[in-house]
Amino acid sequence: MLMITELHNADTFTFKLEGTLAGDWAVEFERCWRSVTALSRVSRIVVDLAGVTFVDDTGKELLGLMMKEGAELISRDILMNSIVEEIARESSPTLDFGF
Image 1 (cartoon, rainbow, N blue to C red):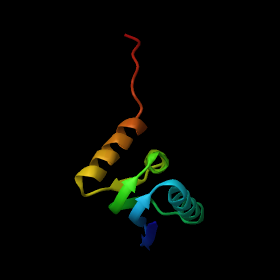
Image 2 (image 1 turned 90 degrees about the vertical axis):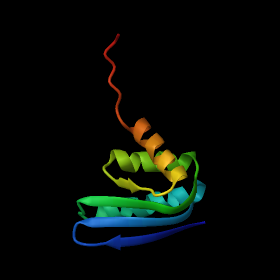
Image 3 (image 1 turned 135 degrees about the horizontal axis):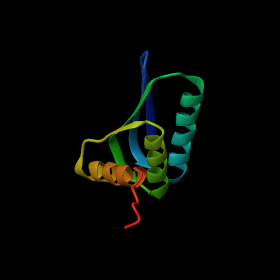
């Protein structure tokens, strides 16, 4: 199960997630995120992952996409910090100099 709380002010929209970001729950969160980005003109999107207990590959893929599109991922525990670092590494372009 995933609980999604939406908090917003003039320029920041925050999704506070609690529970499991996996499978159908990740799909539901993507739907929420897409509807917010389509309807509002916020300059900053934050995803608070402090309450997330598990992330599967679908959830990681979604978080990576969100990060590529400018979302800021906030984590507070060792497991989520590790997952966010992994997503950041996979989301950042690598330079290939052909050596």
